[in-house]
Image 1: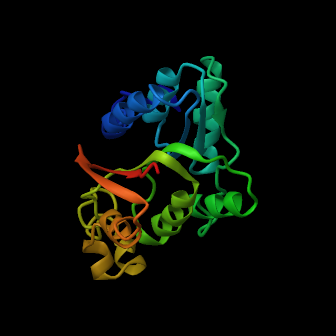
Image 2 (image 1 turned 90 degrees about the vertical axis):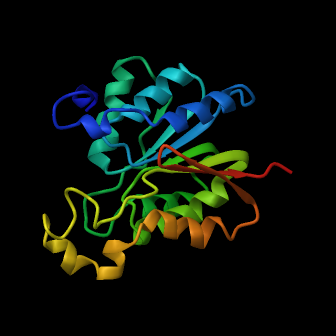
Length: 213
């Protein structure tokens, strides 16, 4: 998977999220073994950068499709990074996904609490709202939740807008297509939770931090 980084056709997913790395650098100065969640791995550009920055300490827990999680984890393990948890990939059925794996892991008390979660998944409410509800309960005090693609919508997507993919108009109504659903998730679930503070938008990534009592 990592071999795709920088290749033609993958330019938009080849750059690690700068805000994730900035917050991770801050965390590493005060947390000895940080636990990082990545929701949606893409081709592994951000995952690889996190692994390099952690340099073997802490843990990286991946949530995405099983195939993608396995490939990224395998590539990183070949490069000597042994702190990758690849147990939470989701099968390929229509309604499976990271939202269910998070809920299952939380209900079974099988997931560690994290210091930073990078949410870069489907960017749609039916996936990210339940995922966010679970993630809030797993976030350690002082930890971060970062939401990528703040201004993204189905309407603006070059691959999913109804003009390019007519099925989108059958899968979603017009309000869902126009709405920036990451913003909706945050307005409903993050901005109403007094345990978290909003720290702004940086390069289209929204940053929330859980208050440390």
